[in-house]
Length: 368
Image (cartoon, rainbow, N blue to C red; front, side, top):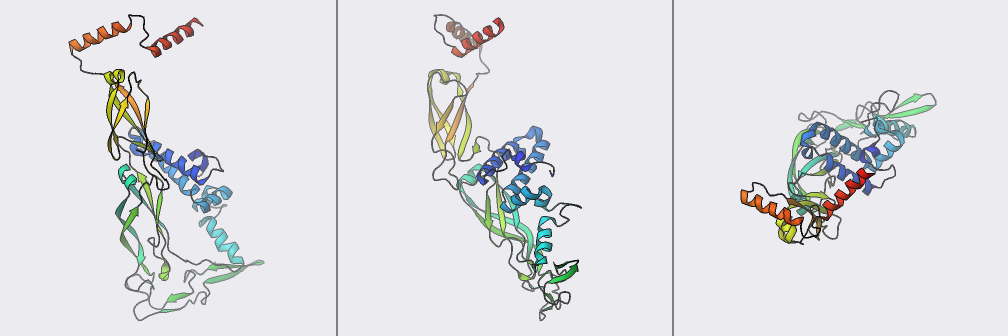
């Protein structure tokens, strides 16, 4: 993954807009979803993970800028010796150069969390409330997140003397680094809480209800402020991002606000015309099939697609008709078809223009 071009993975130019990146991601994630590739699941899973990783970086403005300037390892914090070090780009520029001028790194909030949520097409189109469980770090209920035992408090950190930083002279520079003893807070607990051992946080499972708006699509993220990991020492919690993934549908394929499906029709209906029932997310509708309809013809049903989160109106439904060949014919039915086929070659009328055109093309090909 580190050697690959993330823009090439999504099939977009380096200067692509956020909307172009999102559109490309949606299209590729639908194509390579493992559920849609049961005969090639291993490769599909690999491609699907690759696409998601590329989108994770390129959809984040800060990570994208780091990737553009310094590469994949810097954007993911995985650079090794000779690169950005174990902490990655953020530690180098946040923990050295900023600190030369008296910066310093201190945890201001807890970590953000990402929760993948699988939805059916119907659920995504209509929206719903979902109840989810998230294993995370929550504020310790015994010490209220302070990390100190009852009756105890916090005292000045002896390591940094309350500064939150430890300064070291390196040649001409004075380097300030976050104090490892107090994690930059400047204070430590006098007596650690028995439950969280002074951390201020404990592992737990958080239950919460998330409102999924109508029209969401694969790759959309819903932000729940303050529902991420609790910060150490009672600082602000991070956020939770619920990322939507639409499951494969047995009838419809979705591309943006449009829906696509295939509709089987009988040979007789294709020849003579008629009405067929077409499924939509809101129920059945009647579709008029004109006489002499050819297989593969696409009919548009306006307003029967999906109304996206940012759309003013619903998209359309596109139905591709497939003429179904009759099976299990009786002896009498086969004889009637033979008579019908013979009748097509008499009378001088051209009943099969595509067939005749193809034969003429083949003849011209071999004549040349």
